[in-house]
Image (cartoon, rainbow, N blue to C red; front, side):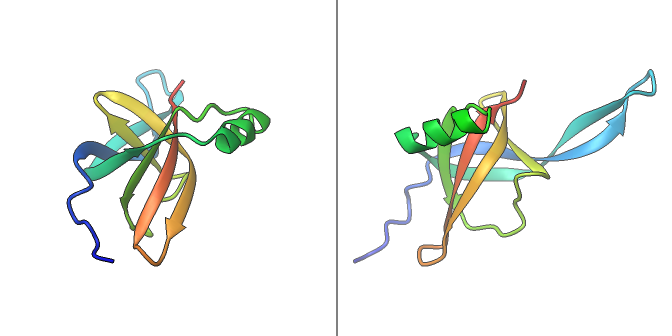
Length: 107
């Protein structure tokens, strides 16, 4: 089966989460832009909603991107249309060289 190459139509910003200190010497997490991501929107599974309730997180979006092994849940976040999201889970499809990211809103 031929692979469709133009499925990643939307743009997001991959952001690294780095610890920093604000003007009152308090620790804060700063988000620094790394690069642009092209993604396709995926629906959220009912099973994933159930698992996120057990882990006390709220998965609100799932996106598919090209595989990048440098991306981790701890060190990176995603900004879509000016809204910041944390990465909750990463699923890797080695055969198709794609990743699925489960995202939750930053609080």
